[in-house]
Length: 308
Figure (cartoon, rainbow, N blue to C red):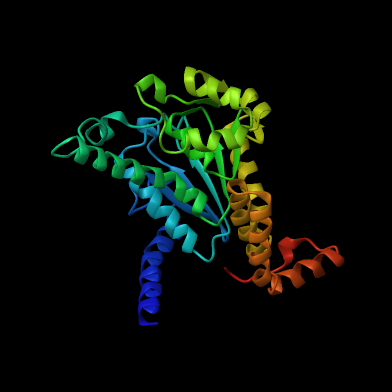
């Protein structure tokens, strides 16, 4: 029990400076301390906006970014006030992908006395970087990603780990890794086939590194909506986030967990999982509140649900 209490206090201690930063900064003011690549703000009480903030480097993913994403989303996952996340990029493009200058030492000069030890160290490095985007998927809060301009390489890894993808008409996507001599290893090859359905198209994009533009991305299911410009897209993303945030967090977060579980398991296993999940989650006041609002034809935005 003492261990559990200590763990809870440690989590709370981590969250306090995070929440102060969220409330105290504007997304237009650059990165939010302690982060150097991310701006984290709270445009509404239950919505968190995370903005990749290296516009002078075309939002290239440097070493700090890979580590800060894990810290950021782990803290969001523990934030009981947050019910939905919007992720976007500052500047002219969403991201130009990996920052080769920053990452060169890890990729090209791994440590180790022999081949076996070098290989183990490379494996550790790749595992650590995979968590940068897996943490988005593990976060129980739905994540809406808003993409404008270029989304290259690691950007595709990032967006395929998100729950809802929106883009502007000028957005384009590129699985760039084969052009720099490697196979994508932090999520694209595993998640993209599940996102767009056509194995042939996935293979084409991954083998050729060609660009996919917004209309094709919409038609194949990579994104669900295309907006004329970034301003309109961000307004649409925030409106969608507000709609999601107005609903029961027990229902919404349970839905995300079960959607991801169902993707990775058979139908019988997934049915058994939701059965076990709902044997406890149906015992919530949120169910009665939502049902009453439906019967009285009230908007859920007028209903107060407890924090989760």
